[in-house]
Amino acid sequence: MDALPAFPTESGSLYLPGPAGRLELMVDLPEEDTGRAGVAIVCHPNPPDGGTLHNKVVTMTARALSELGIPAVRFNFRGVGQSEGSFDNGRGEVLDLLAVAAWAQKQRPGDALWLAGFSFGSWVALKAARQLPVKQMISIAPPVGLRDFTGVLPPDCPWLVIVPEADEVVDPQGVYDWIEGLDPKPALVRMPDTSHFFHRRLMDLRGAIKNGVRKNLPPPRND
Image 1 (cartoon, one colour):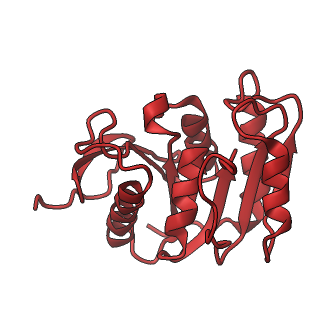
Image 2 (cartoon, rainbow, N blue to C red):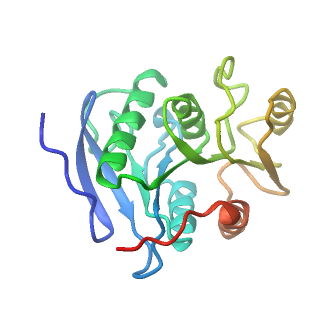
């Protein structure tokens, strides 16, 4: 197994040994002297549909979090971009996320771990959350009705769910019905006149994320 890379001191890409081979990561760091004692991992949408770490919703989510002082780690699931392996319909992707989280926790011990995901990525993040000490969960357009949410338990932390009300991929009412059956329930943000991929509404998404999690930010880093 290759040696684990150190957490970067500059924004950019790196590679991490994963359960199916190399994983491609991109780290977005906060501005100097604004960093907080946390790290966020952002999961991308469905690989067979072209989802990658460069997806605009994923990059905007990372931007919103880094602007709040949280370093954001985007990564490609197995078989996507420069990540090795092949698509595993969620099972292996959970293992990929757990590997990235283990690396982040080792490199930044004591930092609060945040998870975020868009569409398929939000489902993977929720499936992994109960195995991790997550302090904030962000689910964007969770694919209720397209993926099996049976047995997907609410994370044991503050949880923000953002639903585009004009979603042409996921039925928003199905998401609302699913949330009604949860205990505890997440904080829900409905974004009117917004499509699944947040076309022309990415800045609104940025604001919704920042407003939704600001009260839960970890303290500034001392180093």
